[in-house]
Length: 258
Image 1 (tube, rainbow, N blue to C red):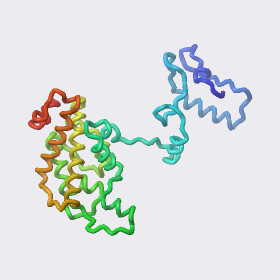
Image 2 (image 1 turned 45 degrees about the horizontal axis):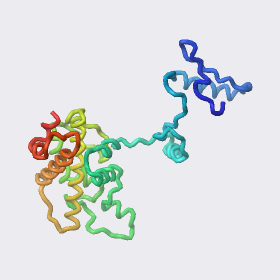
Image 3 (image 1 turned 90 degrees about the horizontal axis):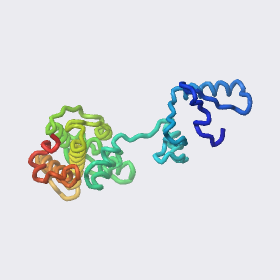
Image 4 (image 1 turned 135 degrees about the vertical axis):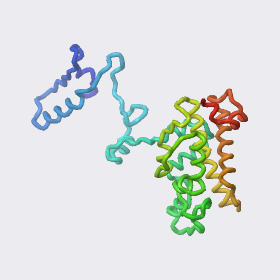
């Protein structure tokens, strides 16, 4: 059976697909049970005679076997790894540095106080609280989602698109959710990606200014204005909104996707 194609074992001459493995020797009892389980697995397989018959390793995009992919598969207890926010982050119409920031947020790898303290036990960070609310310890999920300051930005965003939502557990769950508040078209997805990325980007800028520049900060209304500006700017330079100017998008963001 070495290096044989799938079609070598399938009988396509009849209406119903049947399998004939044509073993070179008689099988023992244990092997018969294994073959029975194999036949049960391939019972529902449908073969297409119009496509090339070849092998494909589904754990790799290239279709080729790699030890790395199989090791990763085994280390995750046989569960294929899939990162839901992948397309929403990397296919968004925002600058690469913004995509990287949002990716680090989703992975929980951003250099917030809790991450720095975990990696460097000998460093004592003071203060280690959230610089935006000064009420809780700083971590990714708090500073970008659960902080009493930043949660107001999310409420403004969902209020702007007239959508209801429930505060998720963390940023990973937020980015994994496919919101269709603006619709399902290309423009709607592009604008939504710009808005979400702009929220993360401006929160991080505001946080860094308060920590490193002796900056007292701005109110939520001012920060929301910055979110809308950056989202409109990124959308205006994308091909999806080539017929709209920055001023038009700033005047009415939602009009572009209606």
